[in-house]
Length: 382
Length: 162
Image (cartoon, rainbow over all chains, first blue to last red; front, side, top):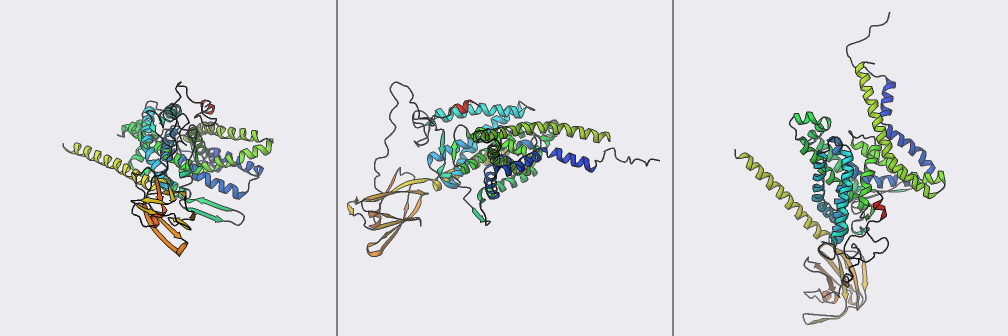
C-alpha cells in the first residue's frame, strides 16, 4: 500500500538536487568566470600580491560607475546603456577644471558640480525618449548614446577653443593648434589620484606591499549606503513597484513616466560622478573615446557579477567588477602564454571583454527560460 | 484653496536655494582649488620709489614645503594652490628669517613676487610679470585649416569604426 500523498499545498517542494541545480543555473555567469579565472591565473604567472593590488585599484576605479546602473534596473528599465551620456557630462566638467587649473579634491568637486546640470539635462532627454520606447529601453538607450555622442563631438571639437564664437578654453595645451577643438588626449595632472590619495593606506605583507585608495572606497561605501537608503524611500518603493509591473503601479496612482525619468536622471548624474572618479584614477582622458567604453564595460561587469536585466544588487557589482577585471588582467598574458604571440593575447582580451556581454545575455535568456519552466513545474506540482 | 500656490512657491524657493548653494559651492571650490603659477623674483626692484637690492644667500620655504635656494638676479616658478600662502625667507647673511603671508586675489591675472621687496617689508610686493607667451597666430588667409600633428587631431579612425 502506497503512503498517502500530502496534499495540503499545491506547490511542489524542490529536492536538494533541484535546489543545487537551480543555484548553479542562477549563478552560472559568475561560476563560468570564476572557472575561467581559475584556469587563466596560473597560466598568466602573476603573483598574488600583484593581482590583489590590481583588483583593489580597479575596484576603486570602476565600482562607482557600475553602481550607477542599479537604479534604472530597480525601475524595470534594464541596463542603462545611456550612462555614456553621464560619462560625457563628467568629461565636460573635467575639461573645464583642467582649463581653469583647479586641482585636487576641489577640482574634482567642481568638475562634478559642472557636470551635474549637464548630466541631469541629458538624463531628462534620455528618460523622456525611453518613455516612448517602453519595453525596448536597452537598445533605445544604446542608440541614444551614439546620437548624443555626435552632439558631444560637435560641442567639444568645434565650439570649444580660443578663437571665434566658442565656449572659451584658454589653455593652449588643451586646444588643437588650429585654435578650436579639444585635443584627443588630456593630461589630468591636477586631479590625478586626488581622491585615491586623499586617505592613503599602505600595508606591508612581507612579500608584497598593498596600497589601498581609501578615499575612493569611502566614497563608494557612501554611495552604497545611499542606494540602500534610497530603496526604502517613497521614490525607491515607487521604482520597485514600477519595475515589478508598470500597469499595476500606474493603477495604484504612481506617476510611472515621471518616476522612470527620475531613475534615469539619477543614474546619469551618478555616471557623470563615476566617470570623474574613473578618470582621476587613470590620470589621462581620451576626449573622444573614454566615454564609449564606459557603458559597455560597466554593463559587462555587472552581468558577470550575476545580475540580470531585471535584478541587480550591490553584491553583483563588486563580484562582477572583480571577476571582469581579473579576466582583463590575466587574459592577455594567459593568451600570450597559450598562443605565444603578444598581439594574439591582445585580441584575446578584446574577444573576452566583448564576448562576455554576449555570453551573459545569452545565459540570461536561457536562465529566464529555465526559471519559467521551473515555476511552471512548481505550480503543476511535478 | 491657497495651499497649492503656496506649495508651488515653496518648492520653487527650495529649488532656487539649491541652485544658489551649488553655484556658491562651485565658487568656493574654484577659489580653494585654483592653482597659480607664481614667479618668485630675486632681482633688484624699485617699488614706490624705494630701491630693494637682490638678496644674497636666500632660501625660500612656501607653505612649510621644501626649502629652495634662489640666487641673486634669478627667479623661480612656484605652483601655489589656493589664495593665501606663507612665504618664509631665510637669509644666510646674519641668520635672518622673514615670514610673510601673501594673498593672491582673483582679479590679478598674473603673479610675480619680489623677494627683495618682501624682505624689505614693502607693502606692495607684486611686480609686473614678464610678457606672457605669444598669442596664437591669426588663421591662414586662405581659409584652409592647418593640418594638426599626428595624434593631435581630435577623433581619429578609431572613433568612426564603432
